[in-house]
Image (tube, rainbow, N blue to C red; front, side, top):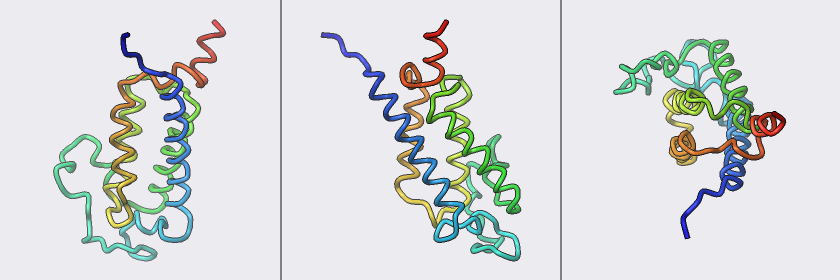
Length: 153
């Protein structure tokens, strides 16, 4: 019997991973341990000194280095807003099978990890590894907006 990928399980994994990332974004920007002050290093309300830059490393030479640098609070809020919209699209399965969507979502999650190493845990790295696999799998063939519009044609 040949092996086949269960696309319903992939769709459920996509939905659960998206909900987990939405909760992660909410917990990072709300007051508490994961406050927005962990993502800025400018004077004023920040937990990190400007010299404590965890984003220096091999990722510095890449094309998305600008996402890994801690900036002002309004720039971080804008990046969190774009990330939240991308996670919402991923959760409901809207345009998430494009060649650029999963890699760009991976870059956004990686930039959050690189900006604030002290508040990350194993869950963040696990999400990155799962998302790499999901870039190559048909995660939006069922239970998604794309599948709904494809069936209506």
